[in-house]
Image 1 (tube, helix red, strand yellow):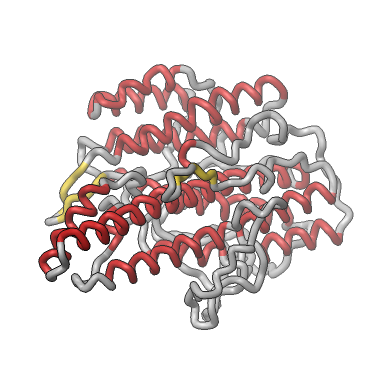
Image 2 (cartoon, rainbow, N blue to C red):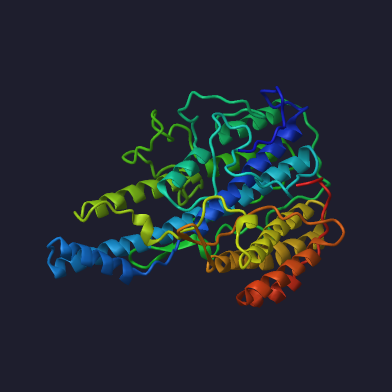
Length: 459
């Protein structure tokens, strides 16, 4: 596991290390993005209901259940799997989108108080990884959807310290992400700090932040659509003084952890009997905190598992109905030749996203708007989402196992001798040669804004 060392002995946030602390917060948010996205793409959100129902009917009939009764049970349970897979995917993507918002809010705070946020090359480079500074340290993985992975999500977003006495050395230690943000808030609250209101920030009312997209909607058993992020749960904020800085940081806490006192049980489990749906992060009480979203997915999984295991046809792993067999913590270097160029292109797209967002903190007005709207917000999200779906149509064999390729979300090492966009075009060309099905993305890549790379050193 890798850990970025920002502090050697400091145990509190002070005006002297405030900039480093906020940068650490930014990198905590960045570390969660590939974890959540990887799991999201491992979910088949529209599994084949006939396949699920048909296999259940066969097993039930073998156990002596009459065909009509078996068909009714199988149809009902397969419908529940359909709804669950779709909803789980929507909720995980809704959290990933808000993590991008949290990265931007933290970056706004840093720009106002301590200078340019650094976003490029900050994704974890070694997996399993860990959240910088978290006590106790625990591994986070790019892994397929499972109860274990959901437990990792719950640990990340826990509103209370994890029930584990093991404390390891860390950068600036904290027990929960929310408590770490409260340390930053306390420093801002208790000190007279100067606020830079001249350098660019990502501001509200420009259409930069969209809390929902096609991937955050799910359909219930009555086929009614539900968006998972509420419009009043949070937005970009202009950080110009103490109050606005504190407001931005509180928004991150409320969206992520919700309220303290509703986390794990003393033994580290989740008591699904007392999961409280009242832990909202918006005024209209329509959106749950990240922790509560994951708790509901976890508990719903357990309920479905119990229903299937109660059929009397043996222990059933319900994930087989809607989870794609992707590898644990894959790297592009270990993919076979027909996949590697596609993965390189995907990682180039992923990294260029951060290049453009970071550049928005150097550009104001129309230039910033064009970079965000025509780069990040339109073309970029379309390209990244599309190629993530495309790469998962490719398979390879490792030992006796057949795996679907998955997005690795690695930082691509753009060189400084040519622009990142020109290098991205080269990556696209190589990817199309290996996998012509993605040729439809060509014009989208050509239309991306040409944004320079700032040299932060090797990554």
